[in-house]
Structure formats: structure tokens, C-alpha cells
Image 1: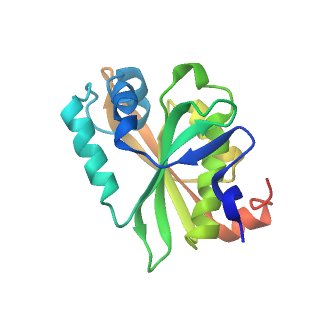
Image 2: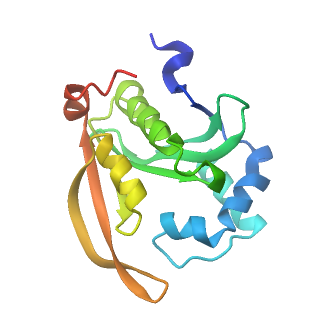
Length: 187
């Protein structure tokens, strides 16, 4: 039994996303620099109504788990993480993360949150595969995913148009047995 340690790490823990969090999340969704790393569509600031619609969609989702990422030291919300499009028959899901507080970039919080969510997916949801998509210019994220055991599987050449240029999108995957063989369950 994992108990409360299921989604708590050394520096971050997960919490439910509530309506009270929407103003902060709305700020993140209005920052085109942040969105440029995670969106594969045209980047634009999101309205308060669009943020509300996003919340209603994730709240009622039957094939996704979304969590707010909080710092252990002060409970400050710094981003969110999710496993979505979960295929319970074939046991796989798509991973996503956003660190919305820029002063928390390059501090290892995203890597730790990714590790926690992978563990949650394998141990709690009994997934066999977790995949993600990362834009090639987001080298910080790419290397973090590699460090956690994700392997590059597909390069979608020039799949993203951003800032007047085409960029590759990389699909990465991690299998449960690979993760366990590399000590993934140990924290």
C-alpha cells in the first residue's frame, strides 16, 4: 500500500485542480512563451471563459487524470501534470506537463513531477506504456525525459510551425518493464 506517498516527492506533490486554481492557471494559459513549449496549435492567450471550459472538460473526463503540482516547502502551485487519452484495454496513456511559474524552471521540479506521474501511471493505473510529445527545440524537456528512461521513437519532421519556422516534434515512450529494470520504482 502506497498511502499518501503515492504522489509526493522530495520537493513537489500533487493536488486536485479546483475552480479556485483557475485564475493562476489562466495566467499560465495567457503566457505565449509557456504555451509555445506545450501547444502544437497556434499559440494565443486564452480567455477566462476558455480556461473555465478547459476546467469543465478535465473535471468530467473519464480517460484522464490531471493534478496540480505544488511545492512541498510552501504549498505553492507551480504547474500541472496529466495522463490523458488513457487506453485501459491496451494499458497506455499520453503524458503532459506544464511548469507555469517561470522562476521554477531549471530547478528539477518538472523532472520530479514527471517521475511521480510515471510512477502513478505504472503503479496505480497499471499502465504498460506512457508516451509523450516534445518539440525538438525544447531541449531541456527532451533531456529530462531521456534521463527518466523515455526513448525517442518517432520524429515527426517539420510538424510544428512556430515563430516563422518549422520544427520537428519528437514522440517518446517508456514501457513499464524498462522503467522497473532501471530502478524506476525507487525514489
